[in-house]
Image 1 (spheres, rainbow, N blue to C red):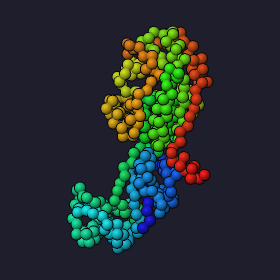
Image 2: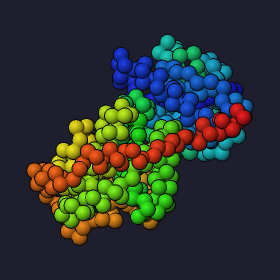
Image 3: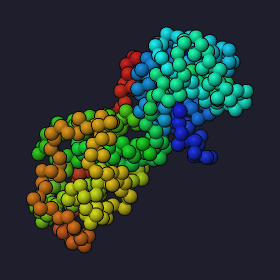
Image 4: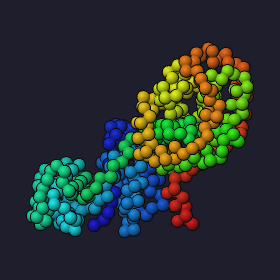
Length: 397
C-alpha cells in the first residue's frame, strides 16, 4: 500500500472566503518544512494536506518536521486503501496482524457523505474482522490499539498514530512584525506566540560590544535558529547600543535610564519595521515582572513609537513562560550566562512609576534623532536559513 501523511487543519476551515489564501500558504509552508527530504507530492483536499511518500521517505523525520508547521492540528502517517469494505477489511488486517495488543477500537471518519456506510457501521464491520481474526477485545475507552479510518473524497486512509501539531495559523498569513530579541527566556516565547498567529518575525537585537562578549550574539543566533524551524528563514538586525547607553549615562538621572534605553530601542525597532514593511513591534513584557514593566512604565515606553506594540506574555507569570520555553526548546539556551546590554547599566533603584512629561524633559537633553541614525548606520544584518533548505542545497550540489 502507498504511504502518505494526512495532515489535518482546523482553524483555517473557519476562514470563509479567505480560506483558499490560508490553505495555499499552509501548503507552501509544508513544502518548505520538508525541503531536503524525499517525498513524492503535496496537495490539498477537504480540510487536509496530503503528503505522498516515496519508498525512501524517512517517516519519523517527516513527521517531526510537520509537527512544527503552524496551522496543522494532527499529522498522521497513513496507508492508502480503497473505498470498498472488503478491501478495507483485508488491508486493515494486514496492517494490524503484526502488532501486539489485547484491546483495540476502530475510529472511522466519513468526510465523504456520499459513502454508503455511516461511521458507526464502518466501525462495526472493520472491528468485527479484527476481533474475529485476532481474538482480542474491543475497548472503546483506553484501548491499547486504535485503528483510524478516514474516508475523504476518493481516498480511504488507514493509520494508527496522530502526531500532535502546533495549531495556529500558517506563518506569513498575518503579515510581518519586528521582535525585540534579547538572550533571555521571554522574548523567544513571545516570538513563538506571534508566529503561531501567522506572523512572520523580523528580529532586532541590541548589543553593547565591546562591553559584552561575542558569545552573547551567538546565543541570540541559536535562539533565532530554533524559531526558524517554524518560519524557515529569519533575518536578524544586530544594532550596537553601547554609544547610546554612554550618552544616556552621561546626561540623564540613573533611575530613568532603563526607560530611556527602552524608548530608544522602540524608535530603532520602528525604523526597522518601516524598512521591512512590518505592522507591529513585539516584546516579551509581562506586567510587573521587572521595573520597566509596570503599567506606568509600559505606557511611557509605548509612547516612543507610533506602531502598536504586541505583548503576548503580558498576563503570564514566569512559570507559564518557562513551560513554553521548555516545550519549544529555547529554555536551555536562554538560561546560559550572558551579558544583556541593559543589565550592564541598570541602576540600583530604577523608576517604577515614570511620568511621560518628565521623561520627555529628560530626553530633551539628548540628541535622539542623531543617536538613532548613527546606530542604524552601524547595524549589521544576518540571515538564518532553516536547516532543511541547507540539506536540499547540499543534495542539489
